[in-house]
Image (cartoon, rainbow, N blue to C red):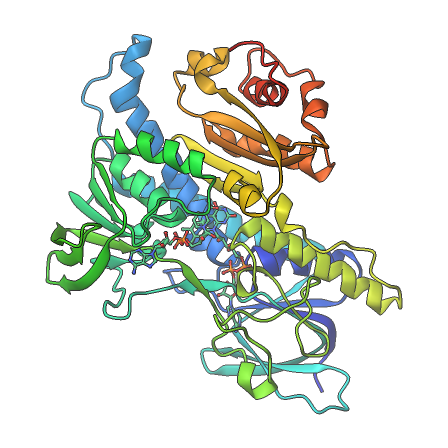
Length: 486
Ligand code: FAD
Ligand code: NAI
């Protein structure tokens, strides 16, 4: 009989690898099973986030923004540039290097923490009611082994949703992996879905010179964001040369030829339209990945959208089986997945010691969202439409980046910070930002909300001058109508 682990983690994305490391730190004998292979056919830990998600997209966003700044923006500083060009293959090699550095980093972290790593697809085998451990079959290209574990953490993530009538070929019709691996700038790029991936990937290739058309089914734009932020973003993006966002559309057909893609759709006025592009990115959301996991064989409960059903502590309906990250309800974000992984690891460690868990469930209300467009968009907590719908009375403090010295010096003056605070208690209920580096600024808002701060508390904190963080401070002062610089 093979060794019995305390914990087997299936999936080594940010949910799974973090859970595995934390389990091992807490003294649990831990194995992590992952099936990801990179384009060279090699095992590559880190899941979607490290291989084809957060990290490579941010690498290309950085490169493309540098190019765009040098080509179009630095002349206002008196810097003359001539013959600025971009070598896309070099940019892609840089991105790939960042990815391999980080994926190899997880291998090192596993070694350091004594997490056993096994490559292959993990399938939960049926368990006798009397058994005291789960058996998991690991299949690596036909080579199989069975491992046993007392506890199982499922962290199998998500995969792109595709249109039923257009398969992804990652040549002309691309998902996120294809969109991150283009080796030349398409002249005409179509994107279906004006969600997070559509906006970020559209930004990368537009900055590099593509004519980008985004087709979005919903009548509105960025429906998950605060309405005012979404409106501001739409008006800023509408002024960007080379970017067209059409909302309220309905895709009728997509024809793929040898060299281009023709999209037939009706627009928001129900008029038939045709879009011809050299490449088409399909970014219409992601679906939970439970393929080959042994769901039906074991009676693992899924909801109507295919997510594994879990309680607030990520416990499934099966004994000692937990699930975290994109494969369960809640935002599909790397930091949410990791936090759930930590909570579950600590809960298992407590239960192994016969102690009750002292951990809180992950609070989705203080999970930050960031969209890495230019300007960036970030938020935490409730937005205005949610507060109105819930009948909660609130106060608003808002401050624009154009009135901030640092933003002026940087030449990045678009956008604002908005703080929503409870009308009676002044407790901060939500913070919404659009502007330069708000991906970093949002952390202060998350901390404030985590510590149940009032807008007064933030107003009392001295912020460095000149810094972008003063915009957050002034927005807090603005809640009580005492902003100083406007
Ligand atoms: P995943 O990262 O999907 O990992 C799951 C792992 O499990 C994979 O390695 C998979 O191969 C493996 N697996 C699946 N089934 C099995 C099985 N049966 N046996 C063995 N292994 C299995 N989030 C952010 O917070 N910030 C961002 O900036 C951001 N940018 C993104 C950009 C893009 C283009 C995309 C696509 C996503 C982005 N995300 C971002 C979302 C983020 O990548 C996911 O929320 C995160 O990766 C989810 O982590 P996870 O561990 O749940 O799953
Ligand atoms: P998304 O849910 O953000 O956006 C999908 C968009 O496609 C929606 O606006 C939807 O209305 C639209 N859509 C759906 N079907 C359509 C159709 N048939 N025709 C036209 N439009 C259609 O999903 P996306 O962009 O694929 O990203 C998936 C997830 O990955 C995100 O929700 C997010 O959780 C995560 N992510 C996070 C990032 C970040 O944190 N910065 C970056 C990228 C992805």
